Image (cartoon, rainbow, N blue to C red; front, side, top):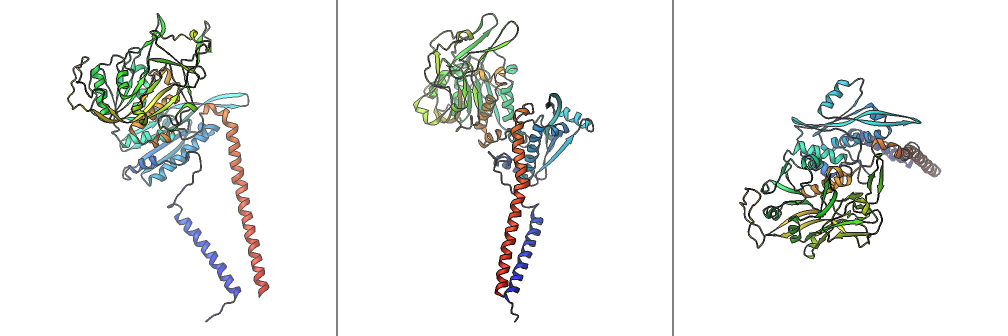
Length: 545
C-alpha cells in the first residue's frame, strides 16, 4: 500500500480541482446551446416575452412554423434614437424564437435603397411603409426616409406591421397579429351606433379599427333588429331613437352573459353651421335601462376649474389662441384608478361636454370607479339649453362643488329591466324575439358619461382614449395580462430624439464604462486575492515539512 505525504495529497487535490474546472468548461460549451435562461431586472420585464406570449407560441405546430421577418434600412440603424428601437426589436424577436422552442423562425434583414430597391418595392406593395427620420448635426438639419416593419407568415396567410418606430406596446402589437393568423375565429362584436349628427363609417374609423383588431367579425346592429346570437360584446355609442324593443334586446343580451361598452352623454351636442354649437338634454330611453341596473347617467354637463382642455380660438389671420374652456375636463393621472385593467397605464383622459354617473348602493360592491375630475369641478344641470360657446367660460365664475366620477366598470349579476314586464312590440322593424325571456344574469359593463370622445376628430389626437377603448375590449374578451403587454417599453419616437438623447447617452456611457472597466477589475482583484491565499497556504505547508 502506497503512503502519500501531505504535500503529495495537496498536489493531487489541486490537480483534481483543475480537472473539475476543465470538465465544467467542456460541459458548459456542450450545453450552452441547449440550456438558456435570462435574468431581466428591467421595469415591467421589458426585455423578456410575457406569459401570454409564451402561451400563444405554444399553439403553433412545429410542422407549420411561424415566420417573422423584420426589415429595416441602413438609415434606421444610423439614427441614434431609432437604433435603440432597432436593438430592442431584434432582442425581443430572438426571445420569441427561443421561447417558441422550434415553432417560430425569425429573419432580420437590413436593406439599402441602393442595393435592395426591388425588394423594398415588393415590401411597399404588401404594406411596409417608409417614414421620415430627422437628424440634426450642429446647425444643419436633414430628413431621411426610414424603413422598419414586420411581415408575419403562417401557412398560406400573412400579416404586416407597416411601421415600427416605437417600442411601447410592440409585444402586444406583434401578439395581436400572430393571434389573428393562428386563431381565425376571434369572436364577433356588435356595434349599435345611435347618433344622427355624425356618420359612423366616415367619422368613427378608429372605433372600427379597434374592433377589427380584437374580433374576427363586426356586425352593425340597427334599431329594430335583433342582436345576432354570435355577438359576445356590444359597443353602444349614443342612444338616440332607441325603442323599447331595442332596450329589450340589449337587456336580454346582458342577461345571457353578453358584455357591453356603453358611451352615453347626458347632453346632446348639436353643431349647426347656421345656428352655431349648442347642447340640449339627451332624451334617450337608454338612460332608463341603465338606471334600472343601478347606473344613473345624469343629465348634466361637468366643468372642471382646475384641469381642462383649452378651446383654440382662431382670429381673422388664422392664428390660434388657447382660451379657458372648463367643460372639456382633462382627467389627470392621479384621478385615474390604476387598479382596474381598463385604465391601467393611462396618463390622462380627455372628455368633452361629459356627464357624471351615480351608482346605486345595490350594485356598489360590484362596480369600480374608473376616473373622476378634480375637487374644483361643478355640474351644469336643470336647463333646456346648455351653453357651449367659449366666451361663456372665459372667467372662473362657476362655484366648485366636488369631484365627479365619469366612468364605471361593472362585473356581477343584474336583474332584468323587463323582469315583470311584457315583451315590447317592435315598432322600428320586422324582427321578432324567439327566445325565452331571462330575468337575471351575470355580465360585464363599462359605462362612460360621454360618447363624443370616440369621435375621430377627438380620439385620433388622444392616445390615452385609444388605449382605454382597447383595454376595455380586452377586459371583455381576453386575458387581462395582455393589457400589461400593451404598455411595455419606453423609447420615444425618432422625431423626439433630441429631447432624450442626453439622458440616453449618459446611461449608455455608464453601462459601457461599468462593463468595460469595473467588471474586469473585479475579476482581476478576485484572481489576485486567490493567488495570495494560495501562496499563504503553500508557505504554511512548507514551514511544517
